[in-house]
Image (cartoon, rainbow, N blue to C red; front, side):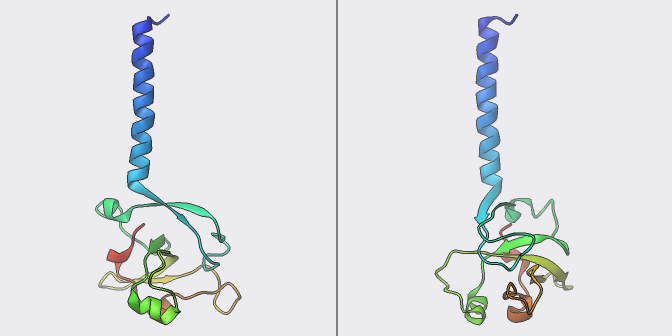
Length: 134
């Protein structure tokens, strides 16, 4: 049987551990809501996804073909795709190629020419890896 003092220490330790793990999770990840069908059938509109903040882990993880990434479109992408630059909605796409300079070719999972197809690197070109947020 643990003494009252030990029980109190374990209680404080448990609360601190829970708080700390929640803090680390929130600080190192970002929750995004999927908007659109470009990643159908992998991700559906309205799905909440948690992405690892790439800027925190870029020294540990390298981007590779097959990774799903999120990034904010630049002015050129917004203009080509007809999106409002004031919208704070990131793109979610899959890396399908990486050129020798590290630029990313991204596409949605939906097949082109279907009702679910969307804008991707075929339309707006390569994406700079520095614009990846997760």
